[in-house]
View 1 (cartoon, rainbow, N blue to C red):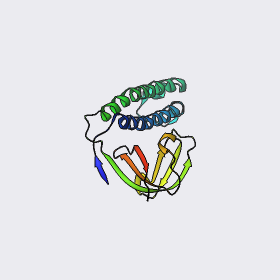
View 2 (spheres, rainbow, N blue to C red; view 1 turned 45 degrees about the vertical axis):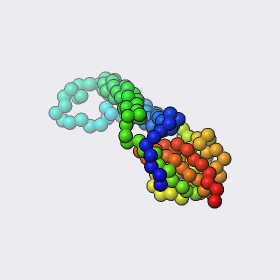
View 3 (cartoon, helix red, strand yellow; view 1 turned 90 degrees about the vertical axis):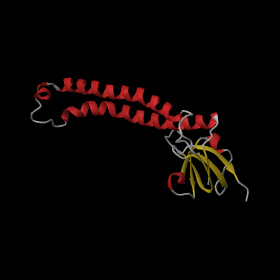
View 4 (cartoon, rainbow, N blue to C red; view 1 turned 90 degrees about the horizontal axis):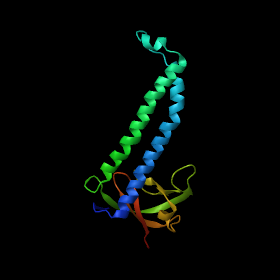
Length: 165
């Protein structure tokens, strides 16, 4: 394994894309939960000492929880991109490039995902299953011996090269 910390602009773009995809997926899940949570939260039993909630109608409670959840969503939508930009800036030292050699076991199409292909390797841990776009896959097939260059913290695949045996 080879480690380094120098990243090109393209490498940083790939890392930002990967972190952005995670953000988009989390935000979509949060939005999908918004309406069911607003409708179901008034049915959750409250404490007996809470007289304010006992006086509210169902619609009023739905509106109140809707305002609370909308505030949470807006906070998440503003805070997370700022946090991501701060983490990915060139000044951060946590980004480390790593290179590993492996054999491709299986390549399959991903369904209902933000990436196109799922590649299974003979590595263990997070690198056993790689999520790649078509541009990253570039003529790799099952059984190929490849060199994978990735970023350790986000597990972003920066480059894949076929090695000849």
